Structure formats: C-alpha cells, structure tokens
Length: 419
Image 1 (cartoon, rainbow, N blue to C red):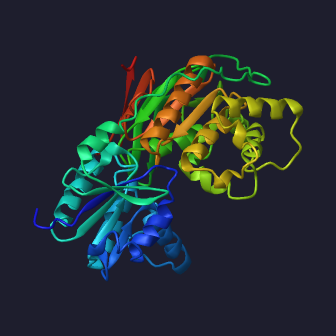
Image 2 (tube, one colour):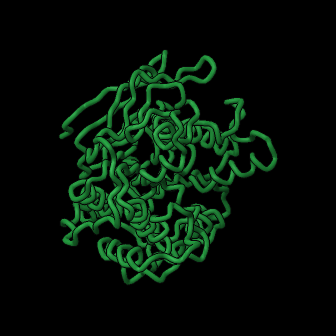
Image 3 (cartoon, rainbow, N blue to C red):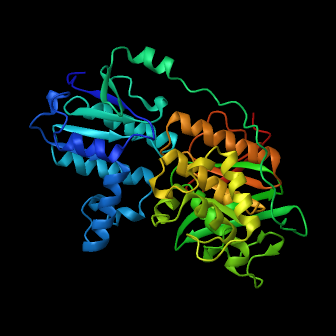
C-alpha cells in the first residue's frame, strides 16, 4: 500500500472519544502525531453523522445525500455511511478519522465499506478509533492506547490484542430481582405473525412473514440493513399503522380490535442505544431505573417503597449500587447501557426487546451486557427479542428469525435451537 501514515487508537468506553476527536481535528496532538501537523482532517463518525442530520433538518438541504435524492435521515445505516464517506472524501482531506466504522452494519455493508477504506488508504492517512478489537484494520501497523495519561504507544499490536482479549465474565451471583406483580396473560403466545406482508406504495418491505414468539423464549432477529427488522419491531410495539388489517396477534389480542398503544407498551420492555439521549436531565441513576416501572422518560411522581427497593436490587445486580445518586448522563457508555437493560426489566415485562444493545460498546462492556442478558433469559419468565446485524460472541439465544431480502420483499426463516 503506497500510503503508510495510518494508525489505530484503542480506547475503552471510559475514554472521552468526543474530546479525543476534537484534539485530533484541532491539531492538539501534534507533539505525539507530527504527521497531522498543519493538515486537514475530517471525522467519519456517528457524531458527525448526527450533526449533518441536524443541519439538514434546519436548512432543508441535502448536502451529504444528494446522490440518493433524499434526506440522509431516511437512508439505511449502510447508505448513510456510504454517503458520509463520499462527502468527506470530496473535501480532499489529508487524513480521515474512522470512528468504529463497522458499527451497525451487516456483513455485506461491512465488506463494501472495507473495500472503500482500502482504496482510500492508498492516498489518505487513516486514524482508526477502535472500541471492539475485532474491527481492527489489519493493514495498520502503528497503534496507540488512549487513556487518562493520553496517547500511549503500542509497540506490538498482535501482542496487545492477545493480552487484552476479553473473555466472558464469570456468572453474576446475585439473582434477578422478582416482579412487584406478575403480568398475567391468557396464554403463552405473545406475538404471532401470520402471512404478514408490508409494503409502501409499490415497494414490498417484508413478505409472508410467519413467526410466533412464546412466553420465556430467547430470540435473535437477524438481517442485513434495510431488510425490515425495524418494520417488524414497530409492528410489535404498536407504532406502525401498517399492523392494522394484518393477521397479527399481540399478547393474545388481534391487532386492531380496540387495544391502545399504551396497553401494548405496558407489556414490553424496550432498549435502543438512542434512548441514552433521552435521559439528559438531572435525574439520578436510581431515578432512571425507577422510571422503568412507569414507562416514563424521567421520574415525575413519588415512587413506592417497593419500587425503590427493587430498583436498588437491580443496581446491586449490575454492581452499580454505589453510583445510585450519580447523574445518569454522567455515567460511562457501558454503565448507561447496563442501566438501560435493568430499567427495561424492572417491571418484568412479558417481552423484552433489545435493539442493537451492543452498539458502540467496547469488548469489556459488551461482555458485561451479554452476561446480564443471558442471566435474565435464564432466571425470568420474560421472552427476549435481541435485534442485531451480527451474532454476538457469548450471547445465548435459543431461536433465530432471519430476514433475507428478495426482489419481492424480505422473507423470514426460523432456526430453532441455535448453537
């Protein structure tokens, strides 16, 4: 490869990635990285993507996504990253910071992006920020670790990866706290799709979906970007009007027979990484956990003594009781994600939906969240629906529902007893 000024920076979720990015772009690390001195850099990151989405909303101008003839907000994850990379390279930078570029991408999109990165590496310096060691770009031969002391040079990358390999943490000894009251349903069938097809105008998203989730089952919903995973989730949680006039049964009741969205949501615990941004007030960690009983963003009424006690038991379970009075938004990303899982489970919903629960986490925190999910599956009556583009090492779903795109819409395939 003609261009060799590439480097990798390994960092945990405790590191201030935004601060590091500003230091790199602002040329504040020139003493350590003289090759970027007086040079133009750009940031390829979910941070910059969010900023462009906000700018488009303010000015109603498609700067980044002109080639798609629609807003970047309405593109799939793969399309968003393709559009962002193309736009940034059009600025002809001397170097580009790649912040976990493979996050939220399916295998095909990762492969396509990797080809683009390899082509780019011949003429543009790459600085890769890495949380998951499996995403390390192998052509990079110079690396640093970023911690409280700053950038620490890594002399041997292979040895570093071997020494810092994260194995699954030992089982959590504390038992899952019990529910205040168990939500009783008439039967064990929680969700039932029968020949469900969803289309928008002439575009078919999913076709002839047949899928049943029963009480206590642990499923993974797998599929590439744009295959319809989000469509199925919004039909389950009551947010998609396309669910009407379909043979869809939720918690024993045919969709469209008079149930309210809130009756559905009361039976579901939900987590998506974007929820972190909702809790940006002065609520403490303990208050945030308690809010799961009320399905509210924040705590706005006096909780009962029982709710406080059980919330504290969940904090003991995830080993964060000592942080109960800390402001939630001041916690590390890994701590926030563990807390969001606990918040979704405090009411022991019949169904727990975890949408890309590992997104943005480092290897250590991914292992912690994985163990927590496995423990919930083993010790509660809650059914779990884990949604991701990837198979997560150590996670133990028993069943897999995989969406495969076709020209006439994505079809679903069930694989039971996943090993």
